[in-house]
Length: 314
Image (cartoon, rainbow, N blue to C red; front, top):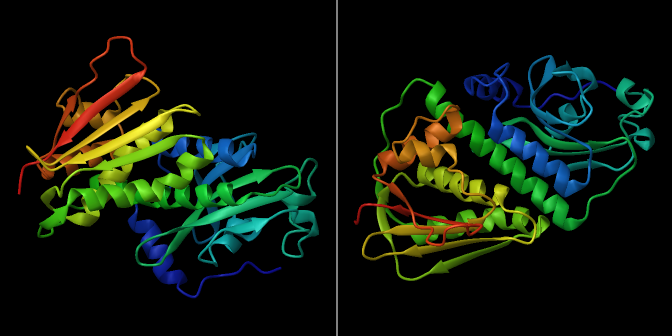
């Protein structure tokens, strides 16, 4: 079967190349995503794929796969980017699109595939977050919900890393935004991932906490901060967030899973610059919004970690 091509292929490729991510070295944030996707979906292989003009290239991968890219003409992901939602192939050997695919016909070949397109805000499908198995496989509703949420987070990571690899743009005019609203939206986006990993994620809201912000940029940074806590929390653990309006707008976050500061935290605290572009971009966004970070863990030896993000009052 001929390889399908999206109707907006020129715009899609332009958006992909503008990300300046193709052929870049591995990054921990993307590696964490494929690890979590594989864990949640019970699939041995997971990939972040970016579909270029003639190839699909793997930004991150886990499982028994040595290649860094494959031809687009044999890529399952070339079909997945044609849609706007998750594409699931329970048994590729019984699917007319893939039965003759060399990766299906090979010994111990692909049987199961599920891929969620990486959609930009402009509607371009850059590639997929996908999971693969050598045996027929199905996903339950919680797993599908989590895979979609993880794919959205991959797109957020791509947008964040572009902030430090692109030419600087003039800052957008900030406006008054309720920190409670931004945080609640981020928690709701991440709840599907938390549920699939058996992690309780809670949010406490007191009073409105207005800040001057670029809401799109600050939302991306908050998504990253909360997900960073979520991804190191073990199954059965808890991530708790609380937003306060006084004495200054503040987000309190507590979680279990280790007390080592994430890179964005150390960067924002002025301890060291983050090594990789995404946490460096997050620290930069928070710093531009006047945010400071403070550790508030009080019990020595406790598995729980707590910190506060404080913003200037508005």
